[in-house]
Each structure stands twice: as structure tokens, then as C-alpha cells.
Image (cartoon, rainbow, N blue to C red; front, side, top):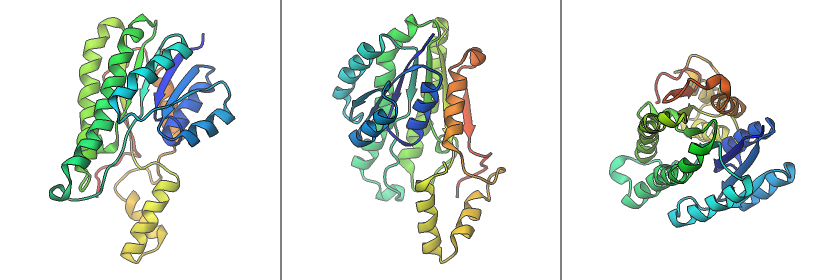
Length: 253
């Protein structure tokens, strides 16, 4: 039987990979995103996909989007909170209160709002699941990304506490913590770092991988595979867990 899946920030990147993985399981999937163009492109590739524009930084926009999702899906079994923004890369004393608030608002407040709205419907599901996307920054300090790291640590506390509250209803809640994800974004970051340090791109890549056991970046499809597993019957005894997928990263530098 097809499950009903809602994924935030699912128009591109990791969110799209997760949505595609559930679609390939023949589940009904609804994604929201702030980028209308990415949503339209995704819909072209998967006509069965349900989509909606939503700025999740605007709390008053979330309930109407959620109601639309419920109408189109006819219920809810799986919520994937994938929303996240990194914010500026600056020292703590240079971080403005406005930037601090924006990051915490989007990364934490929208996750709370989405989950609060979802809980009554997840209680009605025979297999309710919440998957929260945190980050490697949610288990390590991340210099010059104070707001981002704080918000991703917050997702861990959110996950742990929610799993305790919802376990009585057989709703499972887990967090996935990706490391550096392979793709155009990490290549741009590495090229900028190489240019700044006057070294080759290969050297910058090796430096970035030096502090992890597996010498490759994370394939976003593997993150999606982990989410599908956590939502499956095979993971029916897994809840309240923090699952890094980062090549065994030892520290951030």
C-alpha cells in the first residue's frame, strides 16, 4: 500500500533525492520548496508528484501549505523535515542578530511548525515516521557557522524529545546527519578554498577528506536510501537515534 509522504525543501538537492527515492517505492509524495522553478522541473520528470510553493521562513504560510498537502495526499504517514539554511560564514561577534534569527527561524521554527501540524495525522497512521535532517554540524562545533551549528544541535534535542513523546503512539522519530555532500556545491567551495590557499583543487579535496575515515564525499542518493530504510518496516524498532552519514568524520577544520 502506498504511503503518504511530505518532504520540506524537496525541490532540489538532497530533498529531491529523498523524494525520488520514495517515489520509486511507489509512495505518494508531496514536496514544498521556495524555488518554483525547481518544483516545476521536478514535476515534469515525475507527473505523479504533488508540489507547492512555500517560504518556510514565514510561519503563517505553513498551515495553508500543509492543508493543501493533506488534501492531495489524503493523510500522512511520513514527514521528512529537510529545511535548512547555512547563514553567513562569520565570527560570532560579527554575526548580526537578524542573521542569527533568520537561520534559527527557518531551521528550527519551521521544523517545529511542520511537525506540530503533522502529529495528529501521524497518530492516525499505522506506521507514522518523522525524519529530521540535521548535519555533521549537529554533532561537532563548526567555527564561523554559529547559528547553523546551534540550529542543527537543536534538531538533535528536538528529535530525542519528540521520540519520547510519540513512542506511545508507535511513531518513530530519527535524525540523519549528512557530512559534506558530493556535487556542484562542494566543488565550488573546494575551488574557492584552493584559489585562496594557492593550491590545486586536488590538494584542497585531500585536505577536506583528511579528517574522515572514508575518503570520499557523501552521495546524496545514500542519504535518500537511509531515509527510505528508516521509514520502512525493517526499522520499526529504531527511534530517537542520531545517524551520521559522513564518512566517519572526526572533526571539522
